[in-house]
Structure formats: C-alpha cells, structure tokens
Length: 256
Image (cartoon, rainbow, N blue to C red; front, side, top):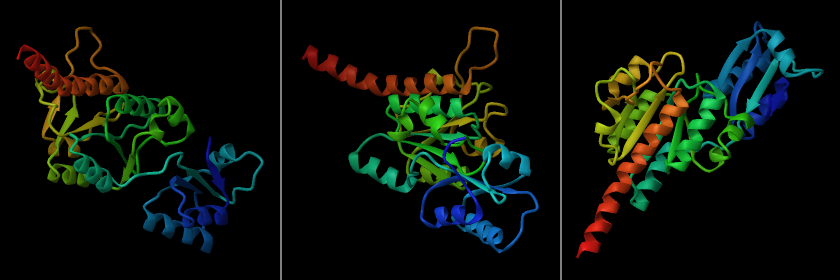
C-alpha cells in the first residue's frame, strides 16, 4: 500500500502540516492522549478514521513500529468545488462535473477519471467516506488524469449537489431502471453526472434530489454495464450533444 505514514506522532504532525490524508486507521481499543488528540484532529479536519484489527496494521507496516496508527496520504491535492465552479463560470464554459456516490473500486475510480478528463469534465467530486482511495494505483489506472482534473472531496454529497443545483446545474443520475434513455436527455445544459456504487448503485437519498435519471439502452442479456464503462458512454454523449450545435452552425455558415 502506497503513501503510508505510521506512528502516532508522525501521523499527527503530517496532518498538522497540511498534507492531505485519505484515511487514518487506528487499532481497535487504542487509547492514550496521543490517540485521543488524533481522533479529535481527524474529526475537525474531516478525515476518515477507521478502527481496525491490529492484524490489518501489521500487514500494512511490515517490520515497523506503527504504534497502532497508520495513515494513507492522498496522491493528489484536493480542490475546493466552489472555487472550481467560479473559475468555470468566469471562463464562460458549460459545466460538466462527475460525482461519485459510493464508487469504492480503485480501477473503476481511475477509469471514470480518465474518461472524464478526456471528455473535458471540469471536476470530480468524491465523498470523504465510502470512496476509493486516491493513491498511486488510482492515478496509474487513470493514466495520469487524476493529476490533470480537479478532485474535490466533500463531507456531504447531498449538500454538494444542492449547491450545484443552486448554481444552475442539472443533476442527472445513471440508473438502468430509468424510463428515460440517455439519448433523450438534454446534456448540452450545465450538467452534474452522478455515478453510483458497483454493488448497490446510487443511494435512494441521492436519487430523490436528482433532476433526472437516465438509462443506457442495452441489446444483450446482461442487465447493466460496469460503472466505468457506463460513465464513458454517458460522458461522450455529453460531448456529442455539445459538439452538435457547433457543427450545425458551421454547415449553416457554409451554405451562406
């Protein structure tokens, strides 16, 4: 496992120095002033903290004295979604943002990031909890896209989607059970695309606040696409729709 920091004091100092941490793992039952301070620090900095068996920590830190504490540092610097939105609006571009709701597989996360960057998406949004770690494996799977597209980590996906709606964006969710097909959805408008968990899809809480759900028409017998493949299909339908008016304008000008 890459980007590992271990030991109570080293982890605390790393967090206090401002380095971005994906999660902190603490041995179950661990106590003491240092661990208590670390727990409070994670709470105030909104860093995911997990109580885990000591065997897991031993596997992560072989031959080292982890003192019951191991942290995984992020391989990217997280961006602020409000700042990203402001920059997009200043440039006069039509926003396209991808939101992860429970995507925990690193390969899917990296694959979606790669497709999003290729499609010109402006940002990726992931929850602090229940999301794939943004480590070296994710960066590699994304073919470096995670170093090129802003990644925003938020405490509440629901509140973030509400904020984006207030900024004039429609929130659409990929859902194979939807009656509306992808190709019947207007994606030329400012759009936020929500992709859900590999196992359970998008949570009911998030589906309730989406402006639309859309399905990809399938001809085979398998019920759904892999989440990464589905994201690629939808993202490049966005590209197609947004390029279509430009092509039409070029043809009209040529006739004149």
